[in-house]
Each structure stands twice: as C-alpha cells, then as structure tokens.
Image 1 (cartoon, rainbow over the protein chains, first blue to last red):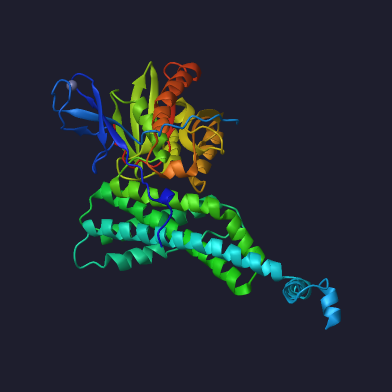
Image 2 (image 1 turned 90 degrees about the horizontal axis):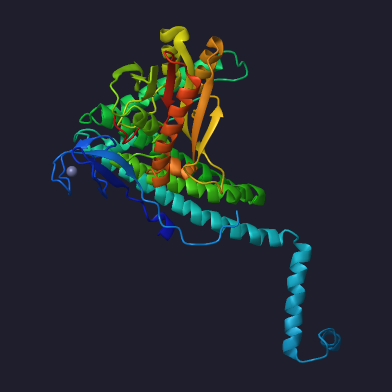
Length: 71
Length: 377
Ligand SMILES: [Zn+2]
C-alpha cells in the first residue's frame, strides 16, 4: 500500500542564527541537536566570527498561489 | 409467446431480452428494498478501508521510527520493541465522576502517576539517554501511542460496520474520517519533529516568554516538575516568568507553579498573564494573536483549574494571549508566521504590563506549551 502524495512530504525547518559579533542573521537546514537560543560554533559568513546563536527554528511559509479569497 | 413480444413492443428478440433484463432489475429493487443501501454500504466500506490502510501505514511507520530512535539510546540486552508495544497498549483510567467532589485532585493524582510511570519506563528502555532526551523520547512514544489508538478506534468501527452490515455505523466513521486523517498525518509529522528535537507550533507560548526576558539579568530556579521560574526586573516591575524546562520535550506543571508562586509572593502579585497556542477556526489566519481574560491553557484541565482557584481566592486578575493555529500546526514543526507571532506577542505583553501593573508590583507571565527544541535564555 503506497499512501497518497500529500502524506509524503515532511517539512524540514530552517535554523536561523545570529552572529554574536556583527549581528548578521544566517540560515541553514535544521540539524539534529539544534535548539532555539543555543550557541553554536559556526563561522559567520560576513565577519568570520566563530560563534553564532540560534534565534529561531521554523518552517518557511510556502508562497501561496495568488487566488482570490472570498472569505 | 406472442404476448411477450407484445409486451416488448412487438419487435425483435434482442429488445425483448433487454426489456426482460430491465424488468428483473427493477423487480430486484422492489422485492429487495435495501438492495441500493447494500451497494452504497459496499462503496462506503471500500472508502473507509482505503483510509484505514493508510492509517495502518502511518501507525507502523511511526512505531518503527520510535523503536529505531529509542534503540540509539538503549543497550543490546533490552528488548525495545516489546517495551514500546507494552507502552502503546497502556491505558489511563479516569476517576469516577458520579461523585465529582475533589475530582480535579484525583485526576491530577492519576495523571501524575501515569506520566511518571511512562517516563520511568522510557528511561529504563534507554539507559544511555540524558534527562532532556528522556523527556523528548517520552513525547515520541506518546505520539506513537496516540496514533496507535486512532488506528484501533477506526479499525473497530470499520470491522463492526462490516460485521453487522450496518450502514449507520459506517456512515459515522466515514463522516469523521477526513478530520481523523488530517490529525493522523499531523501525528506522523509530529513524531518526526520529536525524533529530531524540532520546536513545534504548540511551543509558541514558551518561545514568547523566553523572548520576553531574553538578555535580561535573571534568577532561575525549578518550582515544580519540569517547570522553572525566571525572576527579573523590568521598568520597576518584578516579572516572574514561568515555563517548562527546555530544550527537552516537556509541558511542565504551570498550574502548580503559579499556585506556589502566588503563595510565596503573597499579595504582591497583581496579575497572571498566560500565553498559549489556541485552536483556530477554519478560515482564520494562523499566528493571529487574540487577547482575552482567563487562563489560556489546554490539556485535561487540572493546571487551568489550579490557576483559576488560587487567583479567585486572592482576587488576582487573569489575562490571556492566545496564538491561533490549527491542530495540525500545533503538533508539527513550527511555521514561520507562528514563530513571528511570538515576537509580536512579546510587545503586547510588555504594553499590558506597563498599563496594568504598577511600579514595584509583581506579575506572573506563564508561557504554556511543549518546550521541545526551545532552550533556556
Ligand atoms: Zn559576524
């Protein structure tokens, strides 16, 4: 039994990180062990500082197709 | 024979046969009035069966994921699959409500015992897991148990309907199946989120209070099981933030926490603000923030009862912020507009504190929800 297509997709959230030095916000796909407010040792893409803080983990909203909503 | 030809319009043999066939067909409906219902029943059963197969697939997948995940923290001698199956079949028997006096405390007692037993069983299965992982694993098993229960209920009504050939039994289960399938799919995604430790939509209340006091100097201590208080001062007001301890998956005991805090702080507490995710109606936008009065807190009602009871006794007003989301959004990985709502609600809470709480007074801000994937600030 193969379930329908709509059951297949499991959304992967993005992890948003803020550089502790310059404040640049960067995002990448979620990795196991990430949690909000965790400090991770990852390089800032802008200034090269090696400490960033996770400020949010969430699934990006799919762009809604433009359709006229009556209600 | 001629009369028969006359009946068929006096034409050839083929049209005679056709007419006869029609005649028999119509007779069938006449002498067997439930014939059409039987056809309908078989169609309905087939529809239910298809969805039931999908439910079974979901249940098996989630069960397998749970076992695989628990195996990572277990050692070779423990039969994890047998342990998980035992937990999936476990039940909680609600207290008798014919004599409702003191029922909330009986309910609390039973639920606490159950939670503790469940957690201890998971801990025994996974000796290598640390405390926060045990919490998340417990949630994972609970999700698998929920899905298993849904599957067994639907299977029960399907088989019952089939056995008794009762169209009304099948009709009822077919009617609710679309919503059930949506919830089942949400459970499936939720098990994935818990296995990975991703924040879920229900955690928005906790996320909001964490953001509220982020960067402030504070004192943190545990007040009830899995529940912590963070004390801080802001614009002359003492803010007591109550939340479940993260980033493991826990909801804590906010009711017990608020009760203990008010008992300790005495008359200085001037308001209790609760922030929680709430169920939206279809057509409403996710992440919409609603303000209200009362204790915004879901679950079986024990925690809400405690907050209402103590605040009534002390005459403390209850303010609530509810962030709308669907039932699926509440248990699946957090959506962008819900995460954004956490920031907006912080501003609203700050404004409320400045408006309603005098300088020097104390306010309790409780963030309600599952704290999986949300760390401490
Ligand atoms: Zn930087």
